[in-house]
Length: 463
Image 1: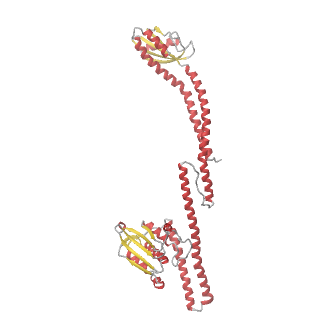
Image 2: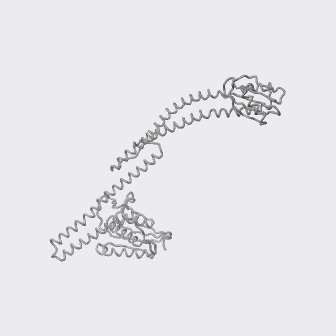
Image 3: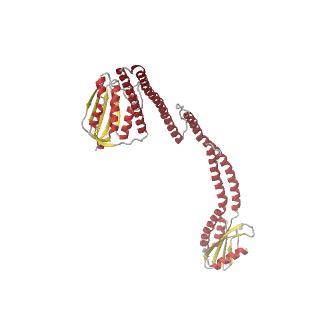
């Protein structure tokens, strides 16, 4: 089945619509004009019959009826006891007096039926035209018959038919032109959008969807596609960066594992001290790889909304202290100082996930704190919420970069620098865990004055 373009379909449907409308008007006019004309004439002679009734009670009713007959272009006949006592002298093709056998028959039947009025149609034998007759009882024993010709309708219909056909042709020509113009106006911007979409499907995210149209729906589609292009471009950039970073994170420990394994095998297998050192390095790098894989899996699950939180009641203060203790070895070995101010406070949340949040925030602060190697952690009791802050004394982050800091592997200097501890996914994991808990989170930073990460727990959410 051949598929039509939007332009062809719009043109076709508008053309068909025009044909149906004009054809319907033409058909209704021709078919209903006879009926409408006759109905109108019937109402007219019924109205005239009231004037005849009023005139009949006057002494000069014949003069009045002559004027009425001439003015209304009808024929009037007054009968008593089947005898005509008055008939109009206005001779026209509508005049049909009781000289006709058919008329005599109808008039006689009406008078004998004792009905108040009657309407019938007959063929005038003199002029062979269709005539409408209306009979009405105007007094005891007196009847009025008013007749008018229906023949002018035939010529009217003929004129209207030719006129409507002419109008139909003109309307159709204009309809085709308008349909073509409208279809072109609608389809042209869509064709441009289609071409730009094809470019985008090839991986070119620098395309811009702009057609210059004034159609609201198409403008909204353009805005949506432009937003999608920006997001896809950003996603593609993150994907490439993620592949490069993960590859780097995998390559470095693998290289170290391979090098140390070869040293153990070839050089230090007899030297216990060196062998142990090489094996420790291998173990550390394997742990680093495991941590990277776990972080990637955790992040993927959270972003796929496949993580279910296991809520329980626990002391936030104790959790923070426990996480800080994990860094004791690091503090002793490398001289880091973690300053903590807190108090006991119970919350309802996923304990393991909150532990992961605290671990990642502290780990991030260690990686980026200043030369004094100090990290400050505070548990703050505000009126409506409990706020947890983790602050470093590093070089800080530019304001323009703050909104990107939660992205995977985002680096403010745009150059990859492998962190001392962690995988580079920590803050993205923190963000997703806090979103799952519906906790407000954020970051405050000032260039050369350090950075503070925080999250807030509403007090009504505690148990």
